[in-house]
Image (cartoon, rainbow, N blue to C red; front, side, top):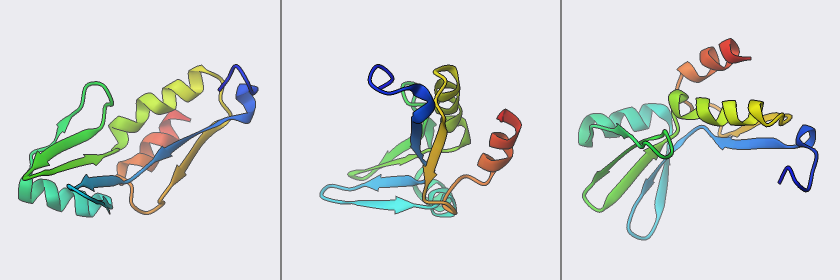
Amino acid sequence: MVKLVSPSKIELGIPIYGYDWQEKSSVSYTWPQFEKVVKDHGPARRDPARGELTFNYGNQEVWFVDTQGLLPKYEMAKSRGLRGLAVWRLGDEDPEFWNTFKKER
């Protein structure tokens, strides 16, 4: 995209919630819901390619973008001179996200 538009006009959109991918549908998770599913069906591991938390149970695949998974995305936006980040689903995030984001800014 930066080849077409000035990086200063681009915001990187990042989710701050999780998904439970089921056979024919998906359910989104807040951080507390994710913690409960991990407790009931985990443990979660960190996916090396995406940096996000994930695990499988039954025929379901669960993913959550926690604070540690967000940091590489933030660093990429910063290193490419993007305008900033755009997050959605406020209130669903890992509670540590805002503390870490304030330190990184």
